[in-house]
Image (cartoon, rainbow, N blue to C red; front, side):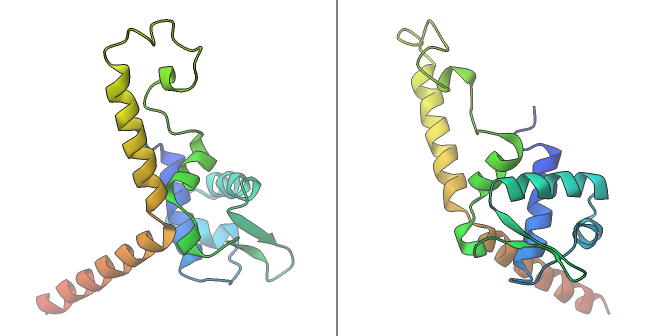
Length: 149
């Protein structure tokens, strides 16, 4: 079981590209190409992100998409939920009536704890954090290339 599905991974790539060019509209085709995301997939993902107000669509010959708010204000939790729905460890945590055994279940407390930890963590990491981490990795990679010469 994959916690993060492929469309969510693609969404991360697309949004990182937008975060690296703040305010500049970028076309779906360019985003798809730069992120190694199939164009049709990128278009569908960008539509979902637009519906959830994470990106804005700019019309016209120089249009495209841009972040709807600063990367520091966009969390991993929002991105995941926009693409694949609520982050839930187990369906029993969705609501009061989903499990008849909820009051006697020996596992529920641990699952609730895991759920809270995951949601808190994903809500604390921002798109800006991912961009910063990617920048550090790129610099390390370039240093490695220089050392090989």
